[in-house]
Length: 433
Ligand code: HAM
Image 1 (cartoon, helix red, strand yellow):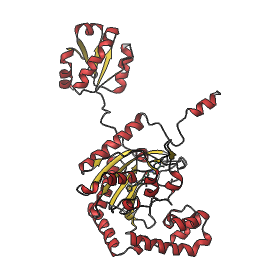
Image 2 (cartoon, helix red, strand yellow; image 1 turned 180 degrees about the vertical axis):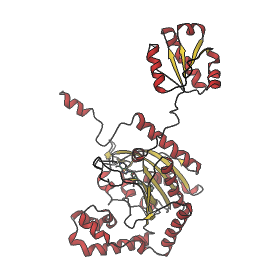
Image 3 (cartoon, rainbow, N blue to C red; image 1 turned 90 degrees about the horizontal axis):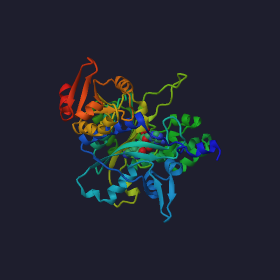
Image 4 (spheres, rainbow, N blue to C red; image 1 turned 180 degrees about the horizontal axis):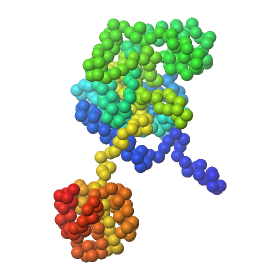
């Protein structure tokens, strides 16, 4: 096989990446922070399978959406089941809620979830085909406090992850009557401008007119400037719901912008919809780049029945694009497992090398983080690593110490040394830390 061909075959799939080193730790660190906040607020973890019956997503996200039409990774098994890789986690969690009869538990049932999702989208800045989502779902409550809690949690997690200038955009689609009314008004408006619209948006007039508000077509962007707003179609109950959500946000001091064009790319939303953006990045030429959504969500009171459930399950939630968050943050997010060692262990000679693992294990049991390079041999080589790591103490374990059952503890700053018996080592290090 030619060299180039070989290289091509051994590449990861387009839009999918290997996560290693700092990127891996940042993902893990973000998850730990988000998990800690969600646990504090009483949410529970859930992980649904990455593969589900295709219908869970086709019905769930809506057949006229980009995800269902273009982005779903679908497959047929040998047993002829039609499955799909999850493009998001909300529909799977609703499937689990219905399947496990969770309506009989105290409501609402509150979940957080984390893992990779798959969308066959065009890869570009901040857009991957496999990416990580962290999601929150509050199921079984119509109350506005649930909408506010979801937004509050999202806001908290972003701030604690070091995302500074956050813009929260919010809108309301109202209940199903209001939404129907809005779709009618909007369609009537677009009908007046249909001559200026391209084929895609014309098609959307039939399948999903709300999506035209997101159109990238210059002419349609102009048309959209005068398009009717969803809040003008809200009935009394829906208006009350939205007003209450905004009042709660005001009380919490969470700033927001009402964005009349925000309808979201998935079909299942009703009432509150929201998205979090960060301030626009600049490219190498100093031009402003389009701000990326770091997360989004909303209420989805009708999803359960759309998916074939027998009863309504009022619910609200959001999901973050974690890849985008770890790229946007200025803070180093480290997981708990990544402790900065204060001690570096140096071993010299075969006798010492063989006994090293037992000493390291003793220190691990005493919860003393220690760094080492057991495959290295020379003293100066290992000391240089210790200097680079900036540790406060090094442990030197040579042939003599291995025979005597002791270790030399050297304080880096003063260069003073002390020989300590192995069975006293952990205590000694704890005292001199
Ligand atoms: P979504 O807006 O489709 O919502 O996705 C949530 C977030 O995932 C986006 O704001 C973005 O940060 C990230 N994201 C989307 N596509 C990509 C991509 N191709 N590459 C990298 N990141 C991406 C949902 O998924 C809903 N399930 C949210 C929700 C939960 N609504 C109610 N509950």
